[in-house]
Image 1 (cartoon, rainbow, N blue to C red):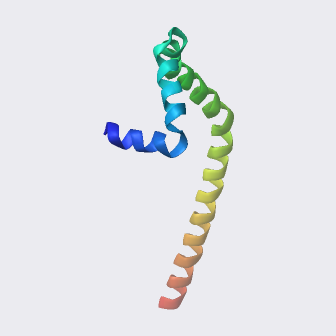
Image 2: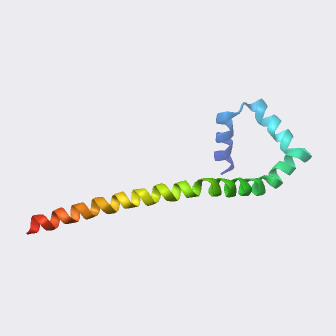
Image 3: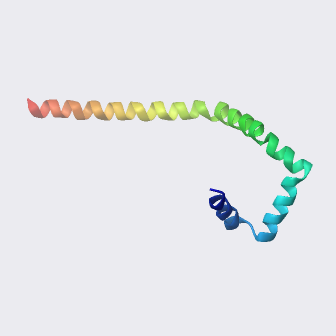
Length: 83
């Protein structure tokens, strides 16, 4: 799996940049970045969810209503064809 990750990093960074990253992550600040990343990401996800979930729910509800209406129309047309 480490080889898979290495390939991703090689895609975006030069060897020199990767060595710089290794040096950074060995520093006290780099270690703190690694330590705090899950907390920071969690807070970001919470904010994004709070900000965008109402719009997502609205869009999903609208799409569900359109699908429901279309299915009802098709069902009514099928019933009409049978009669």
